[in-house]
Length: 279
Image (cartoon, rainbow, N blue to C red; front, side, top):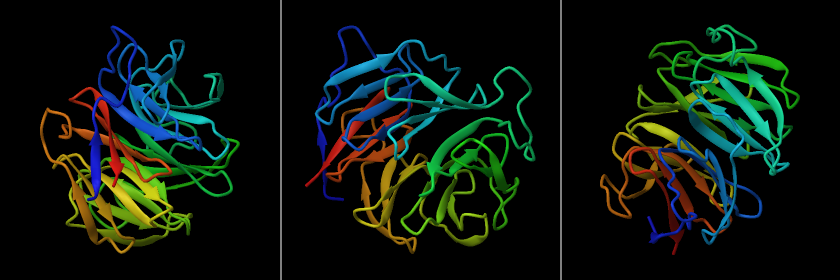
């Protein structure tokens, strides 16, 4: 893939470290939001890597996915806290879905999760949440957090999942689901009707749709690489491989794109976010 590492991209304050980085996303201004399991779970940088802010008051049990909606609000997935948290860009909590205090929900719950992982948005603001490590489904809410439907169960058949790890939508609102342990991406319509699947692509951990290129970028966490896929599931390009030094990857977990085509990747084991600029 025609991308080049931007060395030492993130300019952290003196004495700070990311810790395990589980999620990364970009907003309409190409600011980069990083979700970590360190002391400062939510951090914001500009495209050049300048540190802008951190949220010390957000109480997260264990970070996972993060995404920005069309209105600029952030959605944080707390995998071990079993909640999805909506915040404005200043860090004010606007909505909480799930039940942190009570028992985690089972696969048929309408208002509770069991280790959710990611979120994506429909054009009308509907929410699609991948749920997750214990439950094996995608659950859909409207923009007000009201339950609409869900689909999926544990298994290997079409429409079944084993570790639902992320979700994204394309311009036609097809829903792409990272079926991590089954090592495939499954595709559905917005009501959960099975449309197809892609196999022999690696193990999908994180997904990002490129509207500019009309393709899917995928974190292959098993093989520690980034894979570019056509909407027919054909591999168009591969970036990086296992390693510890800059430019290499270890437990590559989540991925985001900015308006220039740059790729940002979150790594669990290397405690960092790396930027690969388009050439």
